[in-house]
Image 1 (cartoon, rainbow, N blue to C red):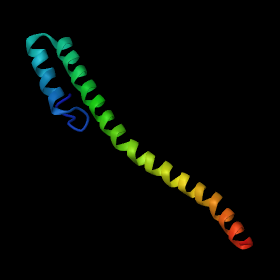
Image 2 (cartoon, rainbow, N blue to C red):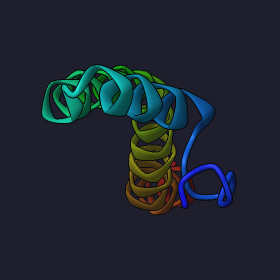
Image 3 (cartoon, rainbow, N blue to C red):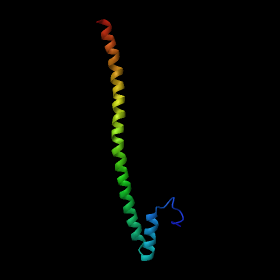
Length: 83
């Protein structure tokens, strides 16, 4: 079934399941697959968070910049009006 659905199961899963069936150690092979995919997901999450952090900081900087401009521009025009 796994080899018939390459859109769901990666090739390495099919191969490891086949080896596990031949060696009569299917639970051990599924444990190996679980460890592999946990490490893969942890690595991908680390990459996404590393890329997301600078983008979020840039968005916060733009928002803070607009707030500062919104506060200081009226004050500047009010002070320059009386000078």
